[in-house]
Image (cartoon, rainbow, N blue to C red; front, top):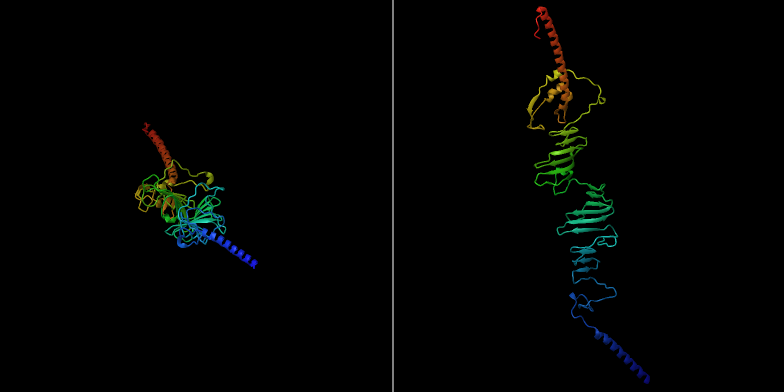
Length: 386
């Protein structure tokens, strides 16, 4: 009986001790002074101003900062300045990085283990621009909407830059149907591949210049260097280089090795004339008689002529062609052209023929004078007045 009483007393003492211990911890806990925001965090939590330090990990469904929203959602996306990030990092606002990039201090580093990294920018109007790291370098792309934009410019790893091509074969290669210019401008010259220079570099208006390569017909192209000064309408002061080797000044359709629409000034020019270049050489003859059949004229050029309205002098091509066909050529439109420079050769021969006639007449005059002297001597020895 005594033994049972001792066991009971010990049991009661143990219960009393456990009760005291549990009561201590229960009464020591203090509830938060204010309910958590939106009642979404169960107790215990310290909502005071004192910082809390946790040695272990902390797993939450979302984290929102009091100062500028920073949110990490269940998806793992992080937003700065937004509570609805739709990518791994979404920043609503500018990003600033100070200092220079170097191997030891990478200010902004993009990487993508599953592919090539890049940056996409969009605006409220729905426009999109991309900077993409690709296998051969960097691609720059823009689009008027949010679909994947086409590549506009490429910086190749070789250092070459391509506009309109992702495989530039030169330091700068432009593969485009429109012009390249350093000022704003729309379509012109039928979207030729061209370099157009700044308008009016000296002020004023009406000044323009470009270098263009374009087609003027099926399988027919032209490289044109043109400039205009203080004048409305299309550029007319130009140099055109044709695949045939023809060069035009003032025209984009030269039908000769050099065709100039306008006057030409030169101190001198030379033509090949070495006998070693020539064969079947024949002297000219009967030139004076032919020249007598030509009529030098003065005239005014018609409106369809290159020198429309200009008063001029010259020879009629059709008339000259009858007697000196070597001096007349026919252009692509069927009009006759005269090589006036070779008329000097004709005139030289005409002078020689005329000098021959003069010498022949002088000999005849001399012979007649001698006859007169003889006749006068026979008639009386009178002194001749000759």
